[in-house]
Length: 119
Image (tube, rainbow, N blue to C red; front, side, top):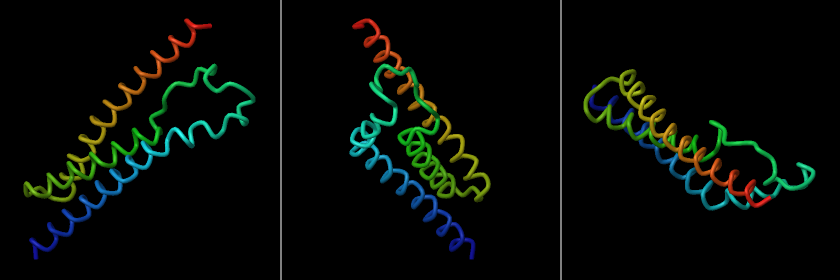
């Protein structure tokens, strides 16, 4: 019975990682198309606005979900319970999501300072 429960939890964590990875691929492919589609709603040039990056950025969230599922699956595979595996997944997701957030913030800041220097 324990093997069936751990295999099921393993499958669920892998499915979460798969959905996160699929969303990551879709956001990379279509992100630029949908990101510039709302220029008229801002009343002008979107690039002049200083908005920054959000924790709710689709790429940051998809990396978090992918890492959560992957690290949770690793925890189940190592024999930990669902609660401990979820905690491992949460820590892994926060670390990798945080890395992507910091990297994206760095890129956005360098792009913003570059566009201000051109003005």
